[in-house]
Length: 180
Image (cartoon, rainbow, N blue to C red; front, side, top):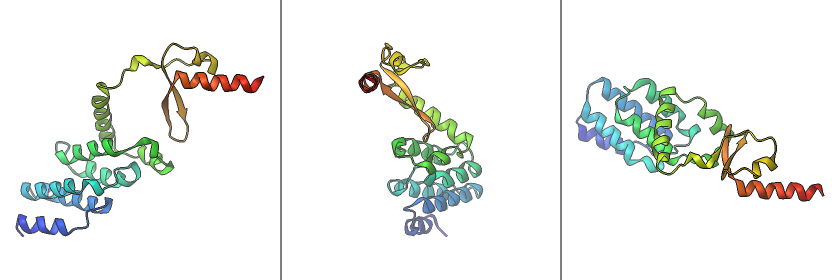
């Protein structure tokens, strides 16, 4: 079968969801093992062309990522594509319990790439000098802190989200008003 025929077949493949993405990732791995760079390129490009219709949320993309990182050599661009689009499309505030659980199952190599990607993205916009990492004895002490942002742990998300000191002061004022 020619590359053009595979290109047509891949376009016909219902790759507009995560199952289709998994099929394309497996096809890419096959092409890589057969040392067929044209086939790999066509498969990778087809996956890229359909990226807008793939849910890159943790639960949805987990099977694709696990399979890809277990079966494709680390230097292939398709792995960075999966990493970067996960980072770009994943909106943590939309996480549900299944997404939180899925995050714990990602391969360590993928997690390391995600961390590096987020560090690079955040390096230009994130100023950690505004964040307070102190453990305050009370909400009042936290509200009086000179740092502009504090962490508030969300148990369901297993993550500490930043909260502005001004919001802490408003919470403290409500607590004080309620105790009067």
